Image (cartoon, rainbow, N blue to C red; front, top):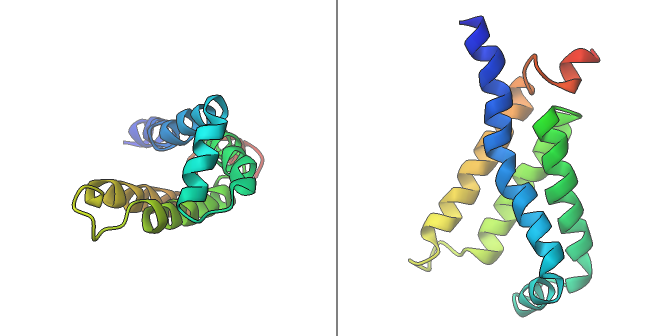
Length: 126
């Protein structure tokens, strides 16, 4: 069972962070459109670089298990805020997106609670 635990943590981190890394890189290639969308949702466009940094570098950090608990906490908060701002549950077409973000926040909070697992930078530098 220990081997299953050892390998499930990095696979879980990969599955959880892939969407953030992919989305952050996509925001770079469609910067103006993303900034315009944010501003249309009353979010200042000047924070887009911070969003990209959190998604790409935060996603990579959790992926490799570097400062995983702290960054997972930030990504959990980001996921909840994104759900509330961009995917209102009251809109039937957005409910699945809202719940997806909430589920991702739950996954990140599991990392906060239990750590990134033994195959991580954090475990190697205890």
